[in-house]
Image (cartoon, rainbow over all chains, first blue to last red):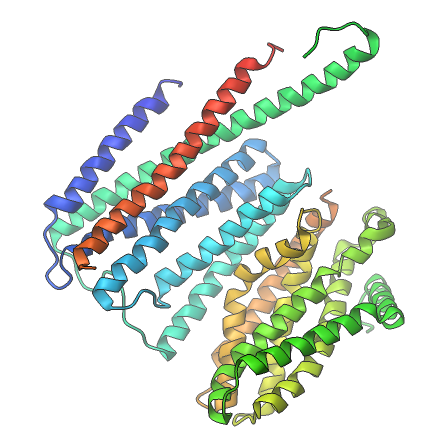
Length: 237
Length: 225
Length: 42
């Protein structure tokens, strides 16, 4: 088990390099947009991975609420954090792609706007976890995650209707893909998903370690106090 | 009033009575709301046509700020003297408490809006082209959307450091579709362009979804330490 | 900025973001390892 992670990490790193090479060199240049379109191979897979991770957070949060299983909570926070990282990538690459191609940095289209709202919801989730002093923080955070999830379909509907009323340039991937491009895209999609899972798993293990250390320290402090009462002469710690 | 459980009614009346007697929060909140309207009016000085375009956004942002300021102290009162702990150990259903708080906040915020709206009309020379009753409906649904989630999230952020900033931090992202609906609907009614039916239905859906979720999950929150 | 520069900026940004996060995780991991080793065997 200890060996698996570094090996997987190395494999994932290689696959990421391979995927990037495919995106930059092997994939053909897009006819209308030019080479800038290659951002697409990072932008969309990152969005997909972020959504998967946020969904994982939702599932872990619900499981936690039902069974109060601490590993479910550890998974929830790991998925949220790594999800935010991928989501940030989407929000950065989006405008960088839009500006040279469509002349505008931002537009309130379905994907970008819902990604932004999800990012905001999950950053607020992480802030709640960080600043909540209660021992029941996991419960509060899990409830916030559920509210966030309930919000998502409403966000979709509101943007969808807004777009029909205020037509804006359609960004990103309209039209069919050349089969070579599709191959590179699917490859990067798979690689990013693997990378996202691995990153989440790594974060999860760190979270479990952190909790172990905290518990041991707390137990230690408890035992120390007990000992200090009975034997006044003790070695310093 | 007879629809509400005795606990809800009692809690609601208690809150109203406390507010009325102290008038502390009410006065400062009213003045704050007034200041917001004036400052917005100074910052944006549009003519009549422009104002119909931008007023909806400005008005709802102003309402949003006032709501947050009002919500912040909604649970603080219960923390003093351990009133909240008393609720927890009592056999009363947590939902009665939540409902009472939400309705109390709703009344409170509505009073604030009733003050601010005429001021906006005056400062911006607003005249609605669409039906005014729709504006009232949007006002009710939109305010309730902010208040129901606001009351719930205020309870969530109760035991956090920097509680006052945490409430808007977790409330605003989730409120985005509701705010968009309020602003768009108000805009449509003011300018008389098209029908606001979709946005009103969306607001109603939002209210139903989140009221249900809040009632379902409030017990968990109340019993959290 | 020519359009190809946007592409390179985007690719660079992606790896800067991921790199920063991974570095932070590694730093945390090392610190936790140290703390675990310093703990007495309970």
